[in-house]
Image (cartoon, rainbow, N blue to C red; front, side, top):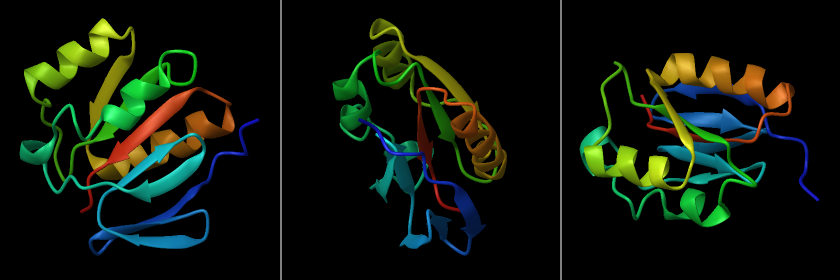
Length: 119
C-alpha cells in the first residue's frame, strides 16, 4: 500500500525540501517517496536515470512530470521514445512550475513520478 505522497515544501539553492527532508541536488519522487537523483541538467538525462520509473510500469506511473531546470527544454529523444513505448506520458516544464504542478496532482491522487532537476 502506498503512503500519502510527500509535498514539495521548498526548492532552490540547489535542492528541495520534500516531506520535511532536505535533498541537496536533483530529486526523483516515485512510490510516494523522494530520493536524490543523479541528474544535474537535461544533458545528464538518460534512460538509466529514469530506469526506476520505467521499472514501476504503467500501473504505478501514468506520466512523468519532468522539471527541466530554470527553463523549459525538451529532453533527449531516446528518453521521450522510451517513456512513450511504456505507455507513460511525459510533461516537461521548468522546475519551479513542475514543483507546483506536482503538489496539485499528488493531492488529487494522480499516479505520477516527478523528476526534478535542481535550480
